[in-house]
Length: 118
Image 1: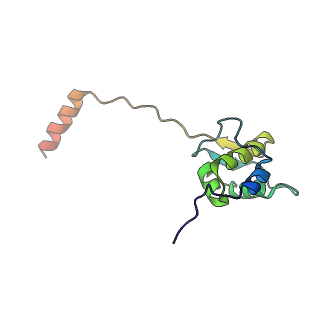
Image 2: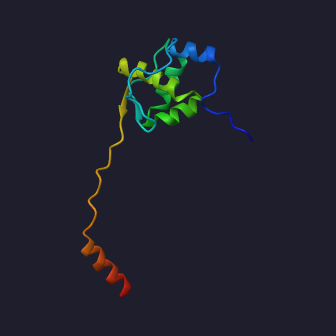
């Protein structure tokens, strides 16, 4: 069974969805940024915006939104910027793990000796 790639779409449709924009203005949304809807969809909203707000009632990653909508990531980022500009969504960026300090080599040697003695 062949699946259609997510980033394939009718260029006219994509042009219409984004209002002619071809890229997002900022880099606020990476693939794992979690999006949370801050309100319910309103009457008269663009259908893609409505679908995003419905999907994001619970935190949802940007990549998941793109997959659910079968839209390119770039298009989804543009739509998310629109929603964020009007306060309809918030973005939760993943925390960057602090690099853990490596244990002392003497401690590792002791652990190794202890394991060998088991």
